Image (tube, rainbow, N blue to C red; front, side, top):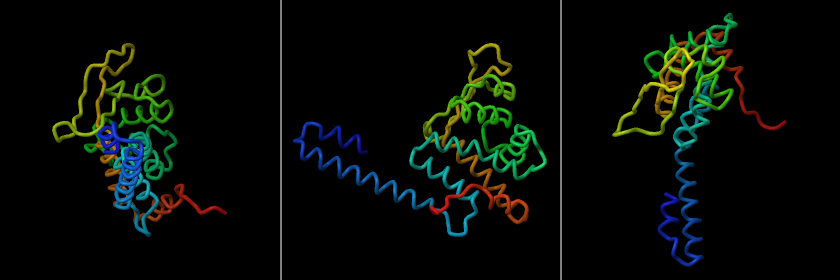
Length: 212
């Protein structure tokens, strides 16, 4: 909206352009603040619920890469709590996805873990090295933004990248992926929050504290 207003007033005198831009900026900022208030956690929300809301807030305001980062980390967080005796990170990540996110996210658990490694470690969706070793179907994931003709569109297309076991490339709407992963995390928490060990572990997650 801000850019559209600027485009329309480009030929106006400076003081009009300046005033319109300031008004537009304030309108956008106000709209964003109203949006974020809808995702404010309640006073008794668990830290995991706060993390989930943070992902959804990021999606809502278009902070795609922040949303993707925390969404990909949620199985790490939940899996480490669910399987405290499992030392293999990939195993507890994949097991948690299989148990709680299967049918919700559009990637197999192994491909999701490969994406987690590629994106969080290297900022890419292309699997190589250790991340390629875990992939099952895809060797690359492209996130898209928004819906096409009113629906989420997931595609799998042949990948031209040779020398890898997986031969397909996934195209996944990031909004849908983030909503599905946060839904899986909330489903896990609703089922497991009455377990004292689980609730204690969630309470030990990183929190924001006032300055000392």
